[in-house]
Amino acid sequence: MKSRFFAVLITGVLVAGSGVAKEAIRLDASSDAAAESSWERMVESVSAAKKQKLLVAMLQINLEGVNSAHEVVGDPELQRFGIARVKDRVAGLDADEIIALGGRASSGGVRIQSVE
Image (cartoon, rainbow, N blue to C red; front, side, top):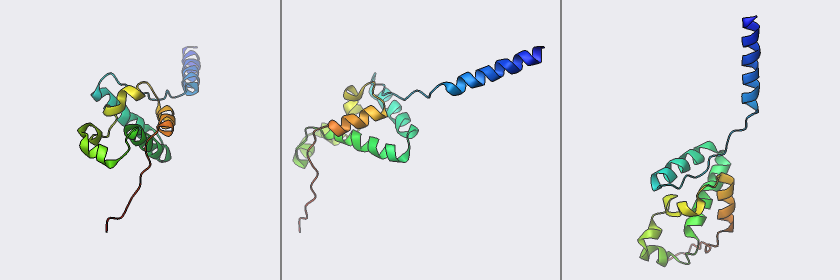
């Protein structure tokens, strides 16, 4: 009787556990260190294709409002691209939400020009 009870209990736990969806990682912006840590976990938890989109989105968010490389050279704050710089803008967002925010960021286009 006991073994049957435990078998049913274990089966119930396994079925219940398999039905629970994996919770999306959200960016913790409580500190720069927390933001960096949750960002790293987020980046590692997604597929390679989504990782690329996520990294591009972070760059777009960092560059929002920047109109030229001259601005970047003149502002040391702009030279530190990273999640800590924009943590307050992405606080609590998951990867899909950060990608969407990056897509809405109004950053200038990138132009490459030869200086021969």
